[in-house]
Image (cartoon, rainbow, N blue to C red; front, side, top):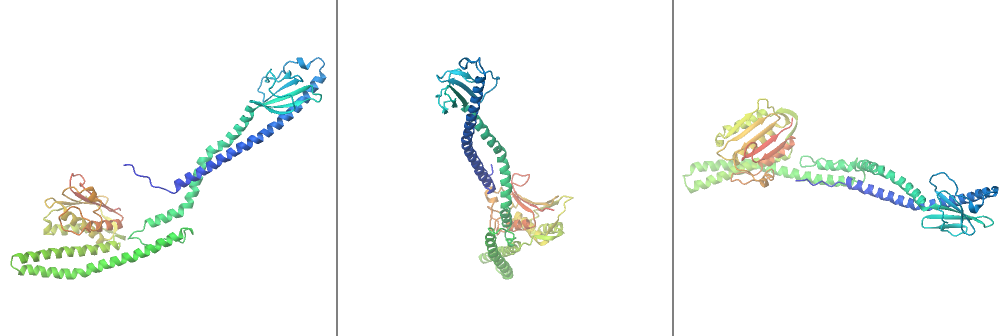
Length: 446
């Protein structure tokens, strides 16, 4: 299944700024095109007029010095075979062509014999007349030449855009990244906040625009701290205070069972005993939950947790109620030296083993194994657990389809403490290497 990409501020911002810059650049090029077209027309017109006046003077000088050349019978001007940007014709008063440049047509230009500019479909023609009005010099400048000059100038402006787009994307990404860095810092800081980390967000180093957000987050964290502390204190006090009266009531119920003769009354008292046992377990779980919420898992001291695991497994193996179902194995090179609290680790392993014994198939063994790398597996037999139920097993007071007694807190407590130790608790069904069963895999990093 393809994961949906998370939205980001940086990407759309870079795209928007780059697009705006490119649009403005293209608009500037379009405006420059119009301005260049107008300015080039003025430049070309001025050059064309000046060239015509100078050329007319030269032609008149040649004609005055020549005695053998009749202007009406002069041959075509013998110019080098090259491209001419300007072509000209010398015409007499009747309109006949007396002299023309190499690229000029033999037919007269489609322009009137009067001084000034005249546009044809393909060229702009300027006409200059001699003082006596006998000769007319017409110089043509093709529109194609003018358009080519404007086009080449416009393309020259477009070429930098090819390099400007990637350069601007990098520059905008760099600038936006630096500008948004305080937001990213604030986001990461807020993302670390949970019931185990309620420290205030440092808003002194943030920009002025972000300080109200940090202040609001700190106010909310303060309220959460107060609520969680009140909840933990209530849970711990309630569980602790309930242990003594529950134990007393359970002792009285057990004594009453021994004194009553077999019958319906004794059966009811046995049900009361079972309820008191469950209530005692619930009080114990609530006390463990309170300690887990207080963050007892982490520790700065390195300890060997292997003896704790051995002791917990031995306690369960000696309990007659387990019916010798618990099997334990450890790799020869397995070590469990970690920065963790020993009591907290004992709570985790006891809850995982107890969960496997209660909810696993009573006719199948429960396997506890310690592998190299700090991996502990607790595997019990039984039917597969549905994927929908697996997602909720780590939640408080959540239980799968089972008829066994329990509070639904064991896995939630274990997961909370393991995360405080920096480890992970994975729940698998089927178990590794099997087609059925349930597995709790705890990994504690070195």
